Every structure is written in C-alpha cells, then in structure tokens.
Image 1 (cartoon, helix red, strand yellow):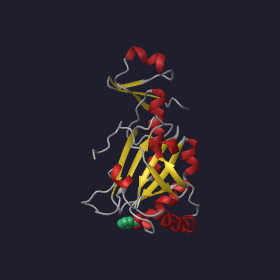
Image 2 (spheres, protein in one colour):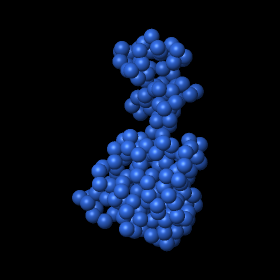
Image 3 (spheres, helix red, strand yellow):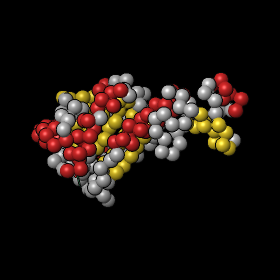
Image 4 (tube, helix red, strand yellow):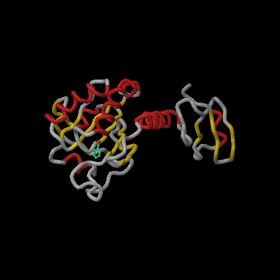
Amino acid sequence: MAHLRLGDIAPNFDAATTNGDINFHDWAGNSWVVFFSHPADFTPVCTTELGRTAALNGEFQKRGVKPIAVSVDTVDDHNAWASDIGETQGTPLNFPIIADPERKVAELYDMIHPNADSTHTVRSVFIIDPNKKVRLILTYPASCGRNFDEIIRVIDAMQLSDEYNVATPVDWKNGDDVIIPPSVKTEDIAANYPKGYTEIKPYLRTTPAPNK
Ligand code: BEZ
C-alpha cells in the first residue's frame, strides 16, 4: 500500500472494538479523531498511554475530538486489559480500542514497520479532521511512551490555524502570540488581525492570540 501522507483521506474500515462493531468514518462523524496504535495489550508503556488518554478524554471532548486506539489483539484481550488500566491508572477506559488480530487496519495505516518489529504495531498517531483528512502523523518506537500534552497542544494549534489563518511558532502554547502567514499581505493585516501586529522581519510577523 501507498504510505499515508498529510492531506490524504484517512482510509475507512469496519472493525470490532471494545464498544462494538464500527465503521470508522461513521464512528468519526463530524469530530476530529486521534487514532493511535500501541504494540500490544498487557504491556507496561501501553497501559500508561491508554490510561492517560482516558484521563484526558474531557480535554478531547472540549475540542470536539474522539480518541480511538488499535492493536493486533482481540476484543476479549482488550476488555481484560481494560480492567487493569482502570485499576492501575485511576481512570476507567472511556474510549474504544479496535481489535485487529488479522492486522488489516494496521496494514491499511502502515503501522507495522518490519525492521522495527515484524508482528506488532509501532506507536503511530494519526490526527484526522472532520473532513476525514489526515492532518498530522507521528511515529514512535515501542519503547517510548508518547507525550499526550503534545497531542492536545497540536490539536489546539491546528484548530486555531484553521479558524484564524495563523501559524504557531516553536513551543507555542495556547494563549501565546501567533504568526501571520507570509501569504498575507501587509496591507491586509489590519482588516484580518484586529489585535495588531509586530514585524520582526518582513517574513516574521506576530499577532496576539486571536482566541483570547
Ligand atoms: C510497552 O507497551 O510497554 C511495550 C510494548 C512493546 C515493547 C516494549 C514495551
């Protein structure tokens, strides 16, 4: 299969999950989606990641985002492991995990990287917008738990960029100044960025957070 790239439509599929059978696009509806793989159930790093995602579900909901995970395990294994997640991570699992024992979804999304591990998924993250477009791809090795604060941060950045035609600088956090894209002509700034702007270089112009 071709590798997925930013801007591609996220491939659709039918699958069994811990919340019943789904059609991925129908399940996503008009929400943003954080679709992430983990190598295997009953493993320590994955347990912490899924617990953290469950704890952050309120933050995802505020942003119109649904999380969903996948691994090459069965629904029965996911369900058995879910009780461990609730017990050890302090939050019951509150989002679906896709069962993919035949690796159909993993292969559709190129989540198995044979030179890293020939059977399990790596830690992929796909952030998908309400138009089903892939907006962000991250790939981490099995040994490194991901930073879910970064996932929330980048969702905030993308949603802000979509709404206000701004870009976000290095290490941006919600509320910080943002960047006026170079495609915006200086004479159009006043009408579109009412909080004013600072020109550091002709190509580097900042404006206060437009959403505060
Ligand atoms: C883990 O989730 O802890 C893990 C999974 C596969 C390899 C190493 C660690």
